[in-house]
Amino acid sequence: MTPSRAQGQPGNVRRGRRPAGEDTRAAILDAARTEFSAKGYDASSLRAIARLAEVDPALVHHYFEGKAALFVESMSLPANPSFLIDAILAGPREQVGERLAGTFFDIWDSPQGRERLVALIRSAVSQEDAARMLREFLVREVFGKVALSMGVPQPQLRAGMAAAQMVGVAMMRYVIGFEPMVRASTEEVVALVAPTLQRYLAGRSD
Amino acid sequence: MTPSRAQGQPGNVRRGRRPAGEDTRAAILDAARTEFSAKGYDASSLRAIARLAEVDPALVHHYFEGKAALFVESMSLPANPSFLIDAILAGPREQVGERLAGTFFDIWDSPQGRERLVALIRSAVSQEDAARMLREFLVREVFGKVALSMGVPQPQLRAGMAAAQMVGVAMMRYVIGFEPMVRASTEEVVALVAPTLQRYLAGRSD
Image (cartoon, rainbow over all chains, first blue to last red; front, side, top):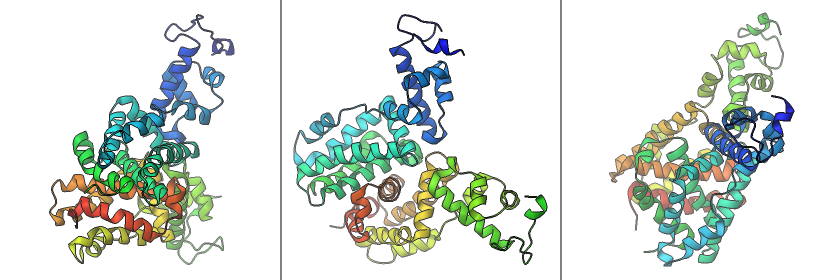
């Protein structure tokens, strides 16, 4: 574990398993997502992330300023907010809730999407960077923009209520593991949650 | 910090500020709630709890088997579930959602109720005792029994969705601090959330 070993350059592969440079960086980010998802921010360590990525701990410090910086970068979003909003708003107004729920569960039911979501939620309860990411991205940029474009009263409060419902479903289904929520199909969950999102964000459809 | 100092008996007050015996135990439980609420389970330490309670750390080990045992006892619920359910079910069926929301916010808007709730949520993401308490108490004993007594289809899944909404509101309002949810009055939050709980647990009222 000498410092010189930490200075790998692309093409200069020293450990066999992981090439240096961008691939090392990507391996550290992958390991960070896995570790933050399993343990949350507080209980995750840079040493454990390095072990999981099969790199020298010095390399983690070489590529990232510290745990907070690594967290923020590893949580960089799997989808562009404006892409999400376009998908949600494209179509009849009375189906906004259904499209929103469908769009989210499409992301969350992929292994990578779920891992990032669980890491974000586990971390948001104790870590301000993660809490800010939830507030600014999920609530304001996605739900807030949908509510604004629907012209409902109290759009930010309604965005908060809709986000609360989705964060709560994610807690029950993926984090806390309440059995009937874990077992339910995506379709069953969407069928129950869509009218709730519809009422908050676009007013009742019926 | 000698061990003899840790063996206080009722009436045998050695440190002046805190009487020994049951009062010491209660002071440790109070301090534990404050610490778990502020930091969550993982980042809380018995040493910090002892410091906050102004007792010798040996006393914490004297009264409680360890961090998990102290956690479980400090989270013991501020209200009896059957009392909650009676309050929710007493009255017209079409107001179940409103009574449920009102009953919960009455508890949550008291400082002690809010502190326990935040501690429970912060801890449930990483600690199985807290996750189990949420699943077994909040979801099954309260929401599940309401859904069952209303005779809706899929009562446990619907209980999970209703609990998800309430846990999500608690996250946004008390833990993550999304500003429009923090600023909203209890009445505004209840007005938005009651129809959601009503639909999940008792079917639509209109």
